[in-house]
Length: 237
Image 1 (tube, helix red, strand yellow):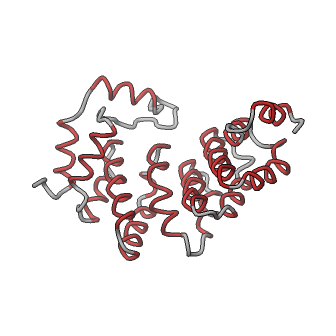
Image 2 (cartoon, rainbow, N blue to C red):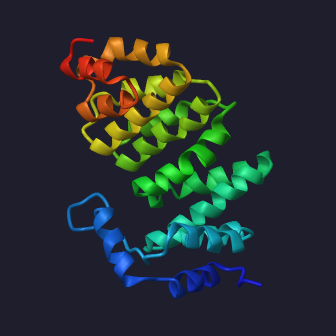
Image 3 (tube, rainbow, N blue to C red):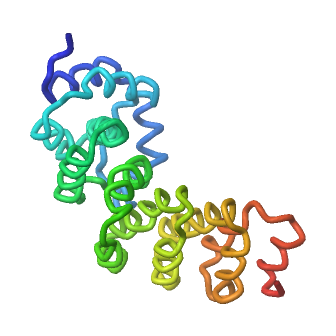
């Protein structure tokens, strides 16, 4: 049986560490001075390995998950979030609420785009499906890049269930955002809306495409026929 503590999980991850992969990941996730992931530490564990370790430790108590979320090692935080996502997907409403509270209390440690993208729809979006969503507007107005991305990516859960209004509202809020990672997040969510309901996406674009950041627009229209895509990029749609 695995050691049912954060330390036990960390030992497993460190046995799997690969310095070469770690160095590549630290470059990919922009961990150099002045970059968005400055100072973050990777172990070089592959995604399948991480998933397997997280699966063996899925029953970790919440205080142990909190310890992992507070680790300076990105891989530890990713493992904690993988466990939390799996438990949200299988747990009842009370378990989901406990994990949501843990997540929002430690949101300062969900601090890279992969951590946000793997967790926000399943933990935040799932919890807020039938609840007041005002908190997303507050996060979308935050000076913290990752809070804004969490707000936007959390709405993927709503989009998958055919509800687009929150995603469209946050995308409007973020039109003037200066961060490329937010442009990508909003454009991605708009593209997902288009997969479900193209007229809704086209309606948003007609009103806003001329002032959308270029990256946001490119992501939103990525699946359009080439002629239509070029018309939007030239501003003649």
